[in-house]
Image (cartoon, rainbow, N blue to C red):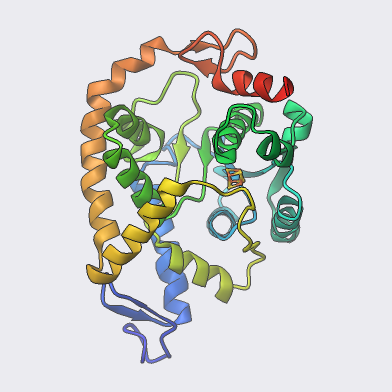
Length: 320
Ligand code: SF4
């Protein structure tokens, strides 16, 4: 089958748009959607200048999504001194997994002009995820600890590096799954937080005070296209799944979405279009919740409790 846009051979078919794309036009299409998202979310303010650039900290795990995101951002802003990129890798202490993905991160940044920082759970919290998963003092899924620890470090180090934005490599599938999970759980407050944390233009959000704005420039690109982009560009990507991955509900939603997308191409796009509008309304309704945010009495992180969740989890893990 030929490419819809030229006479080269197609490498993929996007059922949701009907397009068959060759390698060249797949690259162009993915990059265009990332750049359009940066524009439409107003990520780059007019007052950013080479003398006073924006600093964007990008979470880099070594998986396909964050690798593709950093690759496109670096390519986009290589000649634009209004944006400085800092890649931040979190090492959780998972044997046979994170060291290998760290190799992919280092290979990626080796020939690119991007500052790369690595922070570890071991240094920061004196814990390794392998031990947490084995001891599991609160009888929770490993990801429930790991997600809290990771969010804390991303936020803390983004601040330390002077970030104006904190970027992560969530793709369209990730975002549509989160949208459905929030709706199926009936959690309107969570829907509002999702909007303020990463959806819509920045001037429409009401992010928490002292919280660095989050952005997900890859959120219009389906997961399969991200994977194909990484493969055809021969980017260094670590493909293994974490041995502690355990989000059972998300797995069910993933299966559901795959089936829906197969039977009704475009489902993910329409979920996100409607959800973003609903989430914006929910954010308007719940915006005042921000007034309750204070500082953790132990570490100073923003929290709505006396002590943040991360400090409580570290204490529980230490007590074992
Ligand atoms: Fe952490 Fe879960 Fe991700 Fe593994 S899958 S790195 S345990 S959040």
